[in-house]
Length: 183
Image (cartoon, rainbow, N blue to C red; front, side, top):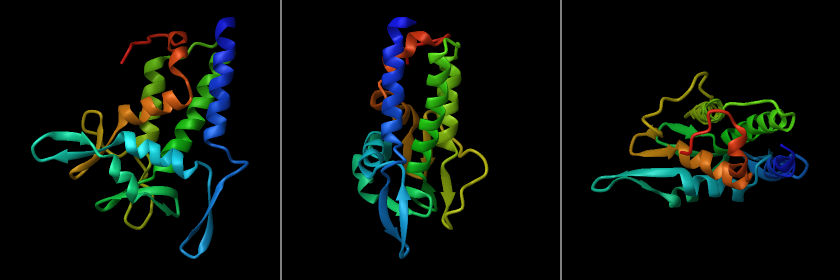
């Protein structure tokens, strides 16, 4: 574990840097100031890698230009898909908080299941959806395979999680998890 201490601490630092509450973005939303704990560029990157579109001839394809539709709302940065809003900033912040808890457990040599981690991250993503009034749904948005489907648009959950792992440099730590399976 000693060899991994630096990697765990590095990942924790990156998580804290991405969700930096000490220097939030300040935007004007509905005439008032809105603080954002996750920067716009981070939100933009997450949407660019995880937004998909059901192309009539090709099936589900990556749709990075959906990032151009990111807007600041009452729940932070969000993107509208039909009658729903995917609360991108909420999903990222919840995933960062959850990942922090896991990394802190690992730093104490406590075992943690890789599958349980991915399941928890998935639930944080599925739970970050609001209706047209901006009210967050109380449960989890349904998924179809690895997609949250909003009509002909969707969020590729594995892409969202993989991007989180890349940003936080978590992949070198995978062998510390029990039940680790390469996805």
